[in-house]
Length: 71
Image (cartoon, rainbow, N blue to C red; front, side, top):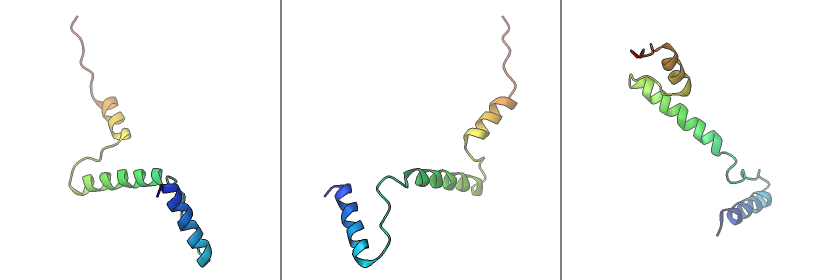
């Protein structure tokens, strides 16, 4: 049974019982990735490490002194 067929079967069962249909496959993928990243950052902070992220990396590049060439 494919994912689409399984979703349609679940939606039909929900309709029969008067319940809300489940979300379509793939609609919550972005939310899951965001929550996973937030959890990783939280675990890093709890462990005493700096939280990873694009903003932190950009600030690190901006605040770090550049190496000057001697040529």
